[in-house]
Image (tube, rainbow, N blue to C red; front, side, top):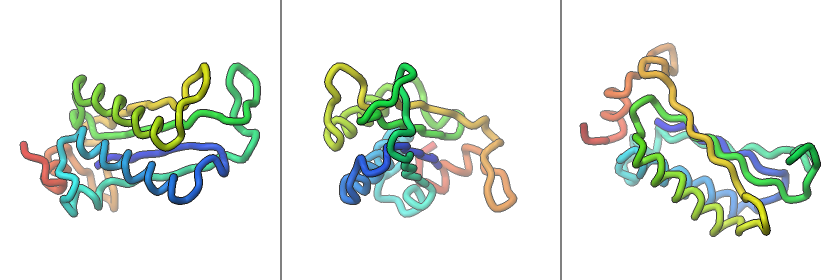
Length: 142
């Protein structure tokens, strides 16, 4: 049950690039969580937001830059990832961004932050979803 948020400069990606980026990152997170990518429940619980910042709204080192890096935030329930799957995930996200955005000369093209929500603190529609229930809904073997 990941929540993915990608923040980018307005107009930095065209719609096909944006669609490919969000689809590939969503599937990378499912893969890292060990969920079957073709499982309808896993796909239904993978929410992703593409957030554009107005041109000129991103600063690095206190200076506005014309091609700011992407900010990718992936939030998962506590225990959905481990040290190994985190490494796999950030490596795959890096490869996806390199493929779609391309590397930037002399600096990073993205930051990826991984966040965990304490087990028992993920909720929706007025109910709490513990990790065990989430895994079951996503088809993840125990």
